[in-house]
Length: 82
Image 1 (cartoon, helix red, strand yellow):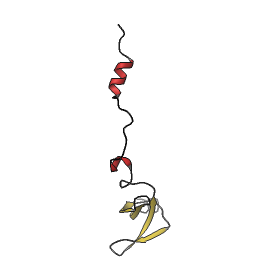
Image 2 (cartoon, rainbow, N blue to C red):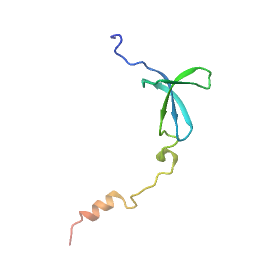
Image 3 (cartoon, rainbow, N blue to C red):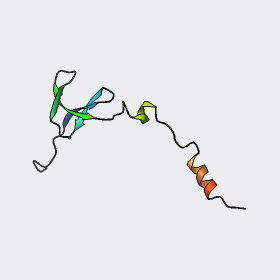
Image 4 (cartoon, rainbow, N blue to C red):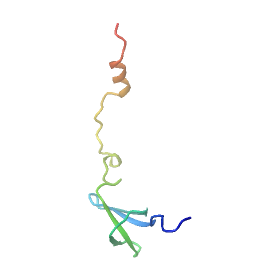
């Protein structure tokens, strides 16, 4: 394996600013801030706007705009005329 061509893979804290939610996962994202995690160690911090804690799909607040099914619309649009 060649040296100095791979990004730095390390644990990073991702903080959702809208939901006050944080998770620590391995990442190669470049950050300039650091935060002390619950275990007392200091990790790089990446602030994001949306995560599974605030996304409408995962929170169950997503609205379904299409009340009629896609197949039904297709059949109605391209049905043979008598």
